[in-house]
Length: 374
Image (tube, rainbow, N blue to C red; front, side):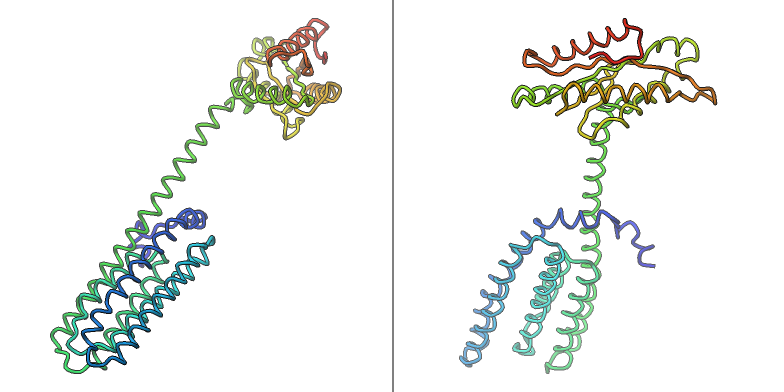
């Protein structure tokens, strides 16, 4: 029922919940340490109230000093551990333990207060602090806030004497209202944070998709000419720096225009897509395959000398020749010509290597097609 009522509020990130919590960890730790610092200063500052209340009881005043100093010391220790925390689970347990300690500290402190001591404003402030400052799950935060209310009301009801029923009733009503407002506030804040994270992830995915579409040829799913040449340029500079083997092949479908003229452009698109798939299935993970334009493709093979590159080219040629394109049950057979070149120390730029491979491709065409020239 609550999920239906607060369906838009209780944002469920699903599998992203762990990523969300980890992305917020450093921010939550910084805020937690800040809260600890504020409460430590406030706790020590209240010693002047203890001095007034126990001016005739120096022994009890010294106990209050030790009590407050002990809380501050534990808080500082928690802050030091929190600062070094790198795991969300450790952070949650540490913050839950510290907030629980703070609640018990405040409740036990009320035992020392006289019946006419004004606690209502402190109770409301502390309740809101639990709701607004706690980064824990909603159920944990509500449990800690409820524990504080039950403890303080128990002291006012059963352990104090001379408490007027009317102020007590007002305090109970005020605390109930504070719980409702605090609950709604923490739900809204946590939902806002989760929705912001979801929007960030959606935007990131959209940018990655745009980048993917900009670098991938939509028809053949190979790299675009621009992206292929960018990677090839980087590999060529690496070849010049370390003198490692680098080969490139340029592939071109034979008589592609005839396929378009005979069967239509749809058949031509199927043939290009099939050719690209065959080449990508035969290449290694470290090789780079792209479409240079039309029916012309290129395959870059780092750490590969010419003889090994020729073996790969022959394998691609043979697989493509034996893989007819199926157009409505009618097989369309095609071949390809390939020019293979290896980078040489005399090459001054990537264009020199590409020009040589392109010349070899032209030679394969001139020599009867369906062959590899190197």
